[in-house]
Length: 116
Length: 111
Image (tube, rainbow over all chains, first blue to last red; front, side):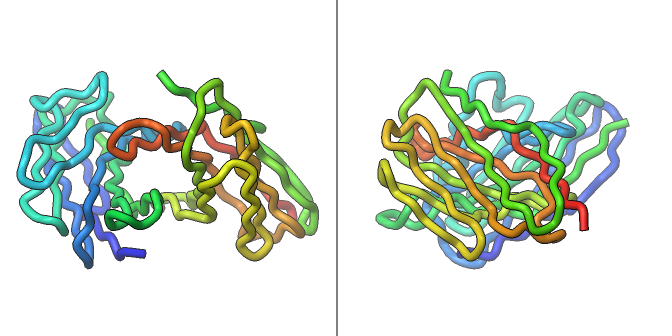
């Protein structure tokens, strides 16, 4: 499986500011995704990061709040904009297997965000 | 939308005991995945299932893809303290490979 890293691993931010989270993969991957895991909860898909085009957002998530970039097949960023305490969560990127392989998704270590 | 019902929500067992957890849905899934998440870490893939009826093992772990494609179970045999964590099932059935996650089963093991 691919080796996935995320930066930062954790951060404490002030209300109203923005934070950009980076996800780096050690090999080219077809699919990259961003998830949110609120405290004590399961994972919820925010969006699919599409290389060369706008991300595809799930219901309840919008580009103005969570802008996403994917400039190439190994890197993506998620920005949490105009943060409020309700945005305190773990943010996880995941990658899908190469086209033609299985449907597994592999996760990065996550970014633990606390908004004061 | 699609939802997964995962049970039990939590389990407290003695070391050496076997564990069983399951996920059910009213929707059909094409793939079932089982993950384990340790505190402060991302979920780690344990087992992937692709065919209805498929039974797959990974060491002391065994998982099955239900014949109706609406459920899956995970068994852990002879539990050990490092099995402690949260186990998530995830089903794949939507477009673009969107995973739907269960709410997780928190496993505690007493030495």
